[in-house]
Image (cartoon, rainbow, N blue to C red; front, side):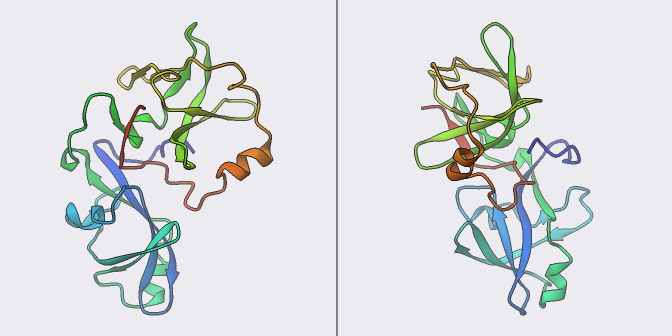
Length: 203
């Protein structure tokens, strides 16, 4: 998915609340950071409009999500009403990155271009299926491509100019069969929340 058009300027989505877990107020949360400490390190997390804040009390890993307790949410009804809510921190609170290191949110929504200026699509998400970070690039028409985020394949990242330069090896841009994409990790929960917090560094 592309960057959510309702995401506020100057903020980064750090987590998204999902379905309730049990009846005592626990809730599944998709975390867009490398460590669960990110739920606690920046103080209360807030909604896109800043009208509500949420303080996390605990988090334990469960498959692809974390099962959390949030202050003030004590039963299933409380958390069911929050399913899908995105939680943010100020970009200024995040640590500085090294050269050629990027937050996922910096890359999502950028145009992927060939050396001649041809656009091959928009970066919709970033995945790691075990062999390194892959840019999920989707054209306006047709099937998408997975682009390895390496110096050889993505030699330039121009965040301020809105694009990345791609120099694909032969065969990389061949259309992938939908079943192949499914096997590689398509259909992940919380697909509507692509803004990941952890830093990427090109290999």
